[in-house]
Structure formats: structure tokens, C-alpha cells
Image 1 (cartoon, rainbow, N blue to C red):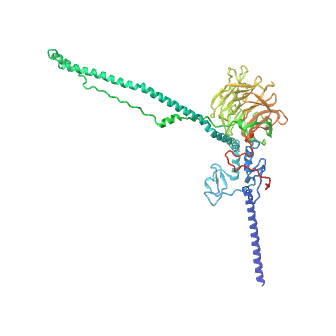
Image 2 (cartoon, one colour):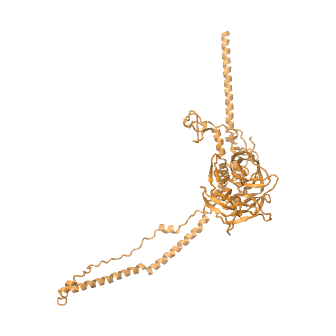
Image 3 (cartoon, rainbow, N blue to C red):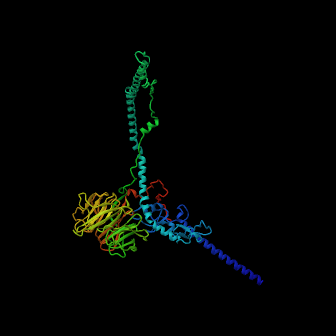
Length: 622
């Protein structure tokens, strides 16, 4: 009995242990299932019995998350969020990324029993542990590679948001309008076609009448026949004279005369005459006539564009968007935007790349001691003037520096540079110091993408010099070259056409306060913005030189404006100060009202992502 009881107790203990393990496993399964349901929650709709997150801006269901705000967004509110100039540079991610969703590990196609764990950087493909081919290559963690690529493509995403997601639908609207007006434009051509047909009919009637009464070929044919008749008569006469000599009696035509006569050439007995036949030339067919009447030519008038005036407008005043304190510089003499959150700034020969925190990300050694000495091209490469007055190019990864334009003329030295987004050319402001006369003169040179000199702008239409010291240079949307030129004796904003002809020189507002120009830039609406040392303001003039307003004035929050840079993606103005190491970012341009309706239908007619207002009975499902 004791042995039997012991056996039963042991079995019961094992049973309880197994049951406990089963319960633990079940608990883990339930936990895993709960995590799966949480991860899948963005795809659960309002009609399902499960709870879902609600959009922070409307009753819609959450599908995205803005890390910068932070807030949750439905698909339609996400579109509005990334197109709004105030939030265009925000980091918007899928809601999965917000909840740290762990993606399913993908099986290696070459080794099905293993999963991808690394990313081969040279080959740009995922690899597993057994992918021998990539063992000697640089491999990164998949998650790290993902984050790096996301950061690299932020600039592209901003361009897509500012153009493809906003400008292109506006262009589509224009195309649809052209389709509707196509019939209206074709109607005058139909009338012109009928008029052309009537003129052709009248011409044919006139030609037929003229041919029947004055056919030139008739007279030509008649003339040919008469010529042949005269020729034949003369030929018969020659034959008769020959025959007549032959039959003459011997007493009138001696034997010696006859022998002498036969020595001459015998006339051609049979005269060759051509007969003529009248016939019509090849007639026009029906297709030829139709093609002649309907020859409507369609010519390309250039790229379809929408003017920024239709898309953007000025706000009631400049609004401070952000302020950052630079580390490692005392002032900010020049700014070049790379992306919405990265800029190059300089103070004399201290040139550095920074982000919105103001912390240096990279420094350039041996840059020139000047002001408008750097710019950025479309490849995010830095172009700057070094201490030897050569113009260098720093690669996007900031690992390679090359000499783009070498200084070959010691009498001229570069002061400022600007890369043209419209042409890809490099504009360079240069100065010359005459050691004998002490006179300072300036010029602007243009170089193509290969670094070859293509243009020099130096003289006014009257022959006098245009510049003294072109310290800052930029380009307007219409191709005008805009220069901030100042010296002890002369100071103005000098504007020339792309071809070099002088348009105007701006010397200050109508108040007569004058102008001592520093940093300069242009915006998407073709305004020219210039920092003025005299009034300690940022002045706005139009593309023709007319004063519009003082966009910014000296204040405690701004200090004394010295340098400017306009971000074409976010339409924000970066302003550097002469008095401190702070850079302020302002918003003064916004979307046109008609183009910013948050819940307007999509231009392509797709209503899948249009947020419909819920009725009052809707309940939040947070």
C-alpha cells in the first residue's frame, strides 16, 4: 500500500508540474497574441469590434504618427500635415514605427533555412550568416541601414511633399481645364478649314477657265507641228534637186560635173520626225486634298508650369518659427541651406555644418576669410572659396575635397559664390585692387558645370563699371543676377539680366534712409530680400526694384540681421545676426487659401483617403 501510494503521489506531482508548464506556455501564447493584435491595430477599422486609435485632428482612424509634433494622423490628415508649410519638414512615420513594431524576419532566398540579419553596403542587398560572397564586404545591421537610408532620403521626401504632392495636382487641374476648352479652341480651326476649302474651290474654277482659254501646252503643240511641216518641205526640196541633177542630159551636165556632184554628201532620204501626244499629269487624289485642308500643326510651347503666384502668398507678417544657438562661432556672416534641418554657416574663416540644434556636424579647414564665400549645389555638395582663393567642392559625404576652379589671375580674387538651380552654373563675385591708383573694381563671372568660364559681367550699358566689391550674390527666378555690392564710396543692390545688361540698382526705400547692403537672397515669389546695415532691417523689394516693405526690423529676439538664406522646400527664411551666434528661422509665405482646404476631394478623384466628417453620435475609441 505504501509503495502504491508513493507511486500515485509521484504521478500526481508530475501531472501538476506538466499542468503548470502548460499554463505557463498558454500564458506566453496569450501574451504573444496580445502583442500581435497591438501591432496589427493600425489595420483594424472602425467597424471592427476591436479598439483603435483615433486621429488627433479628426474622428478618423490613425494610420500615421508625427514624431515632431507628436500626434496621430489619419491618411487624409497626414497628406495635409506634410503639405502645410508649417509642418512640411516634420518626421511622419507609419503608426507601426511608433509602437516599435518588430517586422517579420525574412527568409534568405539563397539559404532558406536562415533569415536576413545584415545589409551588405557595397552590394546594397540583405544577407544572412551563410552568404559567403559578402563576407569580406562591409555589413551593417538591417535596422541601422534602414535609419541611415531614411535620413539620406529626407531631402527627397521634402521635395516630393512640396512639389509632387502639391504642385502636380494643381498641374492636373490645368490639364483637365485644357481638355474642357479643347473644343472651344478647335472651333475657330474648323471655320478656317471651311474657308480654306472655299478658297481652294475658287482657285480650281479659275485655273480650269484659264486652261480652257489659254492653254500654253496647246500653243506649244501647235508650234511643234508647224516646225515639222517646214522641216519636211525643205527636205523634200533637197531630194528633188538631187534627183533633178541625176536626170539632166549629158550635153547640159557633163560627165565630170556629175562625178564632182556625187562627191558631195547624199541627203538623208528618210527624215525622222517625232509625233506628239497630249495627256494630263498625275491628278490629286482625295487623301491629298484632305491632308491639305486639315493640316493643323500642334506645337509644344514649353513645359507646363504653374506660377508660384497661383500657389503661394505672403502672410500678414513674418513669424518666428525657430531659433537656434550656434556652437563654435561668435557671429553668422553667411548661410547656405542644405536641407530643411541642415545648413552651412560661416564667421570669417570658420565654416561649419550644423543642424537645428546648433551643434557642429562638420568643419571645413582653410576656408577664405570673407562673407558670401560658400553655396550648395543640387547634389548637396558644398562649394566654397579657400584661403588661396581657389574654389573647392566638398562631396556630400564630406570625405573628398576637389579644386573646382583654380585661381590663375593674381589680379582678381573671388569674394562670393552662388550655385544656380535653374542652369547649374556657378556665379562668382570678384574684386580687383589697383595698387597704383588704389581703385577697387568688381565683376561677376559665370562658370558651367565643368568649371569653364562662359560669361563675364563687368560694365554698365554706358561703359562704366557695375561693381566695386560684390560681397554677396544670388539669382532670381527670371534669371536676373542679383549682387549685394558695397564699399566705402558705393553701396547698392545691383541687378542685371542673365545676359549681363544692367536692369536697375536699388539704393534704399523711398524714405531716403539710404542702403548699406549685406546678406541677400530671393524667394519663390521673385522678391529680393536684403539685410540693410543702415536701418538694421531686412527689406523686401520686387523683381523690378520697387520697395515693398521692411520684412524684419531690429528687435530683441532678432538682433541685427546680417545674412540670409531661403529654403525653397519649406519656404522659410534663415537669418544670421551680426551681434550674436543665433540663427532665426522665419515664416512669411504660405499656401494660397483655395489650395489648402483640408478635406477637399483629391485631384485624381480618388476618395479612398478623403476624411468624411463623423456625425455627433461618433464616440472616441482611444
